[in-house]
Amino acid sequence: MNLYLVMVMRRPQFDAAVVPAHQRFLDELRAQGQVERSGPFGDKSGGAYLLHAADLAQARAIALRDPAHVSGGWDVTVYEWQAR
Image (cartoon, rainbow, N blue to C red; front, side, top):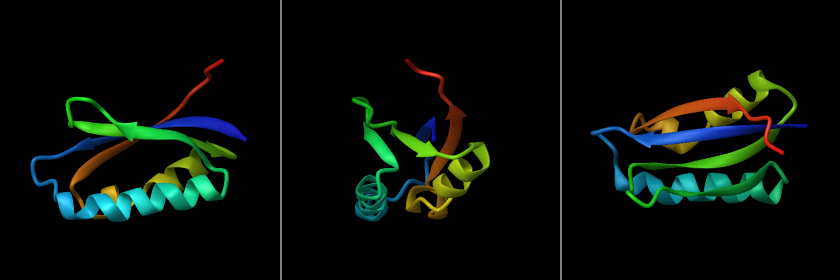
């Protein structure tokens, strides 16, 4: 499994009501061993999570299921991260 950094940045049309669904999504991925760490940025502009996936295509497919993306209130970007 490779490591991917998923950046989730709020758009002006961000709906705070989506946050609980986004958190449940991350909790489910964590329970499956796919999310290592996650959290919001201190300035409340968005957040990030570390995702384990087989490849970039799988990582993007997972991130695009995130309610944050589905709601249209966040920009979601996935980077392959070669952290050590």
